[in-house]
Length: 566
Ligand SMILES: [Cu+2]
Image (cartoon, rainbow, N blue to C red; front, side, top):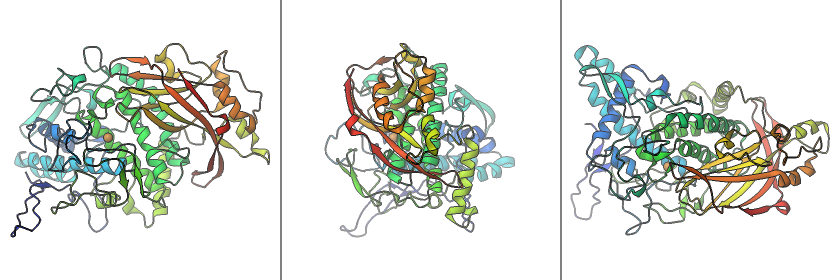
């Protein structure tokens, strides 16, 4: 093993002694220090040959490592939530902290924290891969060593197509090992606890293997997952495209939502919720091998957004009302906030939002954002935008505004607008939830809600996500088209064209909502959720040559706010 374990022993009793600190360092292999070119974190679907062989074997080795080893899958996954335990000697902020891990959610630190977390696994995978490569026969050894040096963690590009890659689902995989071709248990399909899982996980008690979208026997039901993901994915693609192209320059809004932006964190929550099982529970999600595949993609989404918005102001100094294993609430958010428990150097300093801001400092890149090829950020932005437009051809040009609004563009008095639901949901549950908004009445069968013709918007909220009060803003689907196609007696088609002034009242009259909760096994309609809804509008100010849309500030209509318990 060539892991960067650093042992420092002071010569004097008063010198700082930091024993056995794991340093999360940028990988150097394959990095061109002259041009700045860095190996890609690849789409899992394109990972092949020696890199695929090494990656799968490395993950399998980490999963098999003894659970007392801090670099075992068990302990690495445990950093995020359960078990509530110290990692790398980073102490809890008080004795017996609540049921929390080190991970930060619902704050600006969400993206930087998870970037450091993914980099930690990348360090360990790289180290295993180099060891494994050296075991190959002389004839192929040098090829495998080069592959190991270039290996970075792959991602699951879940927004690219509504299907689960076979490498995520198959129970076994064929690889070329140092001893020749062989079949192994697929380490990306599940993690098996060993020794058996502790009773601390009441919900999962007795099930020693991670599962997804489970049936009543706690077996993964992929058919259900793929069906669900097809409809959710259509929604998240719109959210993502809108975040890239229509969203504001504001970093906090892009990261966590607000100002008409749903936020990358909320988009990421949809996969957690729909994949279900371990993934839906924030406290247990990191044990599922899909977690890191998912979070590499989330990291990629952040990287794409940053390239498109080169002048964004990263991290607004403020506090965030969240608590973690190592920090009491509220957490201070600024460029130098420590990202516990990830050590940046052998002296025991922690990574910060600043230290993980640029991938060029972290030894990896994504094919979508090849910064070293461009002499300035604007050229890079133009290249990334053209890639995004190609990837989202089906959505390009659709601005999610109402038809009547676009019809009104000729009028000097009105500007085209988009409409936003701003909601505050109070729900007493520790289950995951999905809140749906409809024009008129929802269909009676909750299973059809996600694909209902009169669906205006929906938002998935993972389990243990401070769900008792959750607010978000959703851009709603074009009003006229949805209402006209709903064929629902309760939804009344607006007098055409609906004037801007009449739309808020129309929405208040027409918007209905429901909340479905899930314990990971069954979905039920939530009891007694309370919601406060306001609608807002946002003028479309301009569309630049690249197709990037600028919006005005949101005008809320608080006089028409309504509150409701079901
Ligand atoms: Cu997380």
